[in-house]
Amino acid sequence: MVWLLPSAEGSQVWIIVVMTWLVSAGGFMHIVAGSMEAFMLMLDGSVSVVQVFGGFIAPVLIGNVIGGTALFALLTYAQVMKEME
Image 1 (tube, rainbow, N blue to C red):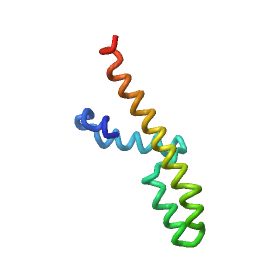
Image 2: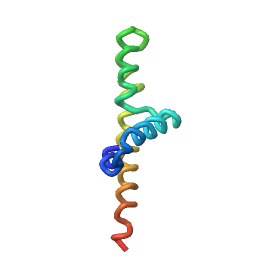
Image 3: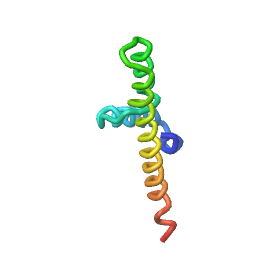
Image 4: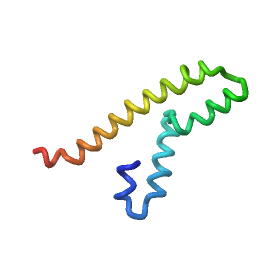
């Protein structure tokens, strides 16, 4: 969203709503949003520290880094592909 919001000019709230909805509708996990739930389950005793970090934090963080990098690369390429011709 960092690259979308500056050019939104008055539609920033809608960009945030749409992106949040896409993450939710797609069933994707986000490291920041899901961490709170994972840590609360850990504090409640429902899951162990190993389950939180090994079963949630590590895979979601890796997926967010790879997915975010790929998305950013595609958006950057789409912006400059006409200049590359």
